[in-house]
Image 1 (cartoon, each protein chain N blue to C red):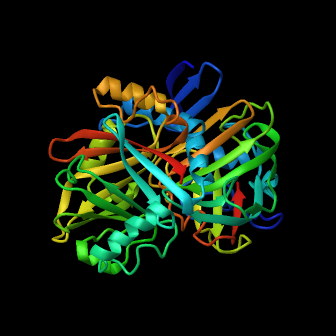
Image 2: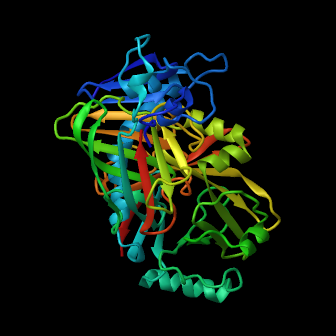
Length: 196
Length: 282
């Protein structure tokens, strides 16, 4: 949901739009916040520039596959579980590239991977801040079931955050993620994903 | 393949980067020492684990998923040779073992073969704590029931969706192997968790198993399972003088590998055995 396009707006609106928690500490010069209106560090800005600002990079529905096999449990969207699907697997711009395809959004043995591909592209670890996941619904109403940061620690993964890339693909990995957070234990259950 | 490492700070976060000679890149949050300096060894190991997770490890995962779970034949390698074969319960060899279990251990679970993914295997004494008599292993690919948990004094908050029972064919004693995710191992015994992780090679997808007897005693030997690159495992075993689990001249094994295991002894604080598991069908 973008910053209101008119009327009263606040720094907290910008922070929430950038993926922050409402009411938590932030400044206008935080990378994720000024990134909403493409400002560099310390750059001049005015309130008019913030009306309608949106941090949304991509959103999609997901029908999550779930398979609990011998030693390997998979939940989400990828190549290994029949019956999974994404409503929109094409991202306009992310990680320094345009026209990118999502190849997986899946939790394998409590390791959540978000993989992207574009033939011959060199991806950078940039262009988004937070992934929001809703499990058990096909829209973004209410509080997300879980959120995952592009870098650093978060509340929904007890392990590490990492980024890897090679020619034509990149992958984010969050370790120690519960299936309740991504993407449930119901085969073909509804989920919604928003990247800001 | 030549790795170059660096440590950088971006947006106030310490990152360790691995760059391969082919241009591939890995960025991980650096592992820190108590004084907040970068722990070079653990940070590099973490980065390498991520590197392989998209290569040979991914192949191992996909191979495991591609096999018909109801026709599985899993071979365990230990000390340089095959030591055990597990069969899906619906296969002919599996049904023969199920018949033995029904004859001798019928009261332990409601059914040994009501889940077609369940595995059974017979094995000779090889390593602690199964080093006295021949045994039968039974792996049930469901979350353990409260009856099983209570029988063996298991009070974990999280369980993986499988557990094992080990039947001593001479004494009829039964041990239970409770399988828990990484976060649960960290919660119940963070010291052992840290000691194991300091010893392991670069790897992915780790989880643990702890063995309980019917007096609720927890065995001093802890199993850790993980995916890893075979060449990394060979190098690590050589460096640490661990016996490599299989005959490396047999080139039919490596393409079928799907997981590795280590036995960590909490008394000696050492890895005592390295295991490799290969999957085929009957």
